[in-house]
Amino acid sequence: MSEPLPHAPSWYAASVDAAPLLPALKGDLGADVVVLGGGLTGLSAAIELAEAGRRVVVLEAQRIGWGASGRNGGQAIFGYGCEPHVLEAALGSDVARAMFDWSLEGVEMIHQRSARFGIDCDWQPGHAHVAIKPRQERALRAEREQLAERYGYELEWWPRETLVRQLDSRRYLGALFDARSGHLHPLKYVQGLARAARELGVQVFEASPVIRIERGEPLHFHTPAGRVTAAFGVLGGNAYLGPLVPELRTRLMPVGSYIAVTEPLGEARARGLIGNGMAVADVNWALDYFRLTRDHRLLFGGRASYSTLPPPHLPGVMRRRIAKVFPNLGPVKLEYVWGGNIGITASRAPHWGRLGSNLYYAQGYSGHGLNTAQLAGRIIAEAIRGQSERLDAFARLRHLPFPGGRWLRTPLLVTAMGWYKLRDALW
Image (cartoon, rainbow, N blue to C red):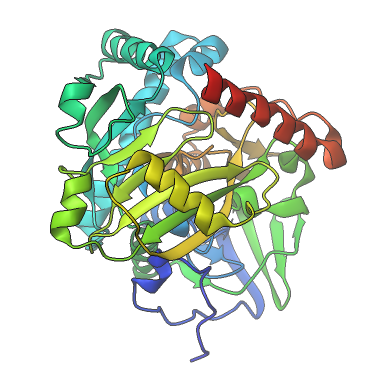
């Protein structure tokens, strides 16, 4: 067996046993469906299709879970990256309500698949969106009313006096708490999905980047040493798809996101920070999010980079952000600091659909992929099996290209995001 390729450095990769490297594709293969990407989207689609009797091949350029699926913040939350009103304005209230319910299905899939396939992914229930400014408090209260009245989804409102009983921070005015959302170890989960897919007969290849796609009927996916021919294809590369499919690239912007994990704090000290073990995220445009790990560390994420370039002196930046939230924590060592790209759309709504009659894609989870990416895989599998109603609903969402073209869109986005950050700071 070949030596394993390294995962991108992270506490996640360091806290799991290194899986044996799966073989790279060599030679020609035939399949019913070929999937690009060994993350949540691709593996979810592969599992659904294999269960329906399809022959499936998954091609992963690096390692299973190497991208955002295996090194994200680990928060699994109801909804999508955009607010419900974005979907309502585009598709009407009835379709938006159905899509909201589907997002809850994405969270439930974590529990169903963990139970069915024996995946221990460190699930911890509870999530709080927290307000820093009075306008954010008003917005969260209004969201609570809207979700209850129009979507039938009840959340708890915690004023500051209630919140500080669970969270050792005076930074926040209140919280919108959801007991059904929560957090997990994403690399453990995605590796568990890969094991399940292989047990169902899916052929999974690592170190097998797709370098060219011949479209038509059938499709041909080429790697450096092989080719897969299939009736249908699934594109699950998201922010790491690159220029392979130009018409998708213009609708997606890779954004750098960064995470720090402390040294072990001990159970008492960790529970002193977050008493009930929930995940927490503020509602700034460039947000902070944080939670505890099973081994009693603090995982703290944020400091998005819209140029995808890591901020200078990143460990120091993360220490200052942690101190702003938890001033009582004192000096603490950061044992892991890493980053990676997520894919956002201009509206933050998911971008799912098909190219031609047989090439399917899902991208643009906008930082909200743990529930929606695997939901996308299920919905694409439904469409390949002839039930396209749910995918057709998402495909009706109009996605504008980012302005500025290839060379100017990143500078323009950086400028726009600077304005939003200034607004968060001043208003």
